[in-house]
Image: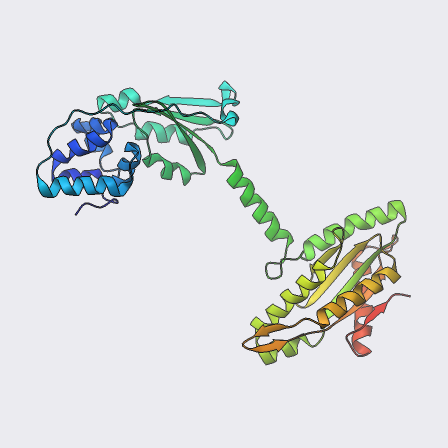
Length: 348
């Protein structure tokens, strides 16, 4: 039984006359009649990749091969010229300057039975970062796609004629930018709750403090700590504690303005940066956050778990620094804890 994952070398080892089936399906595979090309190409190409070259579904080619193998020896058939439509090239690729294009034509190699794989890989290894490698072949070089993808190269396949293909291999800039964005997000956000982390909070607070010094406009800083959070972990487990942290983060950040910043700066400790906000305005906002969180529950293993928090509110003082302001907010937070929890203390 021939399978889509079988190499052509395995297929032809069953009956080399199956090359007739392959040649009828894809005239470019006529090259397999050359002993030297068959030796180099057949072990590298699977039936599925041959089907891709032929423009067929892999199951169709597998069925043809198995039927020919089971019923009777294949009968030589003259290859039928393939109809084709030239492939339009994206404008972004057409706009690439000629100096950034590296062309490699391996059509003569393939026709004469010379394996071009080493030349192609050598060109890829020496490809400048901003350049594009264009490989010209007599059939679609589908086996190269996976090899080049592992090296961070995307591709665009252009068909110029029935037996003339050109593949553009280029750095997958979009993929790299996505990776960079993901790494940046990991560096600036808490992986559990998705809110800003301590690093981003201090960065934004430092920039806001510089604005306060320049404009003499008010900004507030809030320190928040969940009440009796250890009890939640001890009674219900750390998974339940994680759900409480996520709930509080979601409720609070959802009630803030776009210019505000809600951050997780410790285990159950959070901080809020409120630009253009007076202490009175900040107190009103934090009370609304406290009420919203107090009305919310998470359900874990059939149990509803809620929480409250205590908070300290201070101004972002132009004559201080971020550390000093956060320490002052923490002092006010501890006063709120001492006075009974689930309350807000504001700087005088």
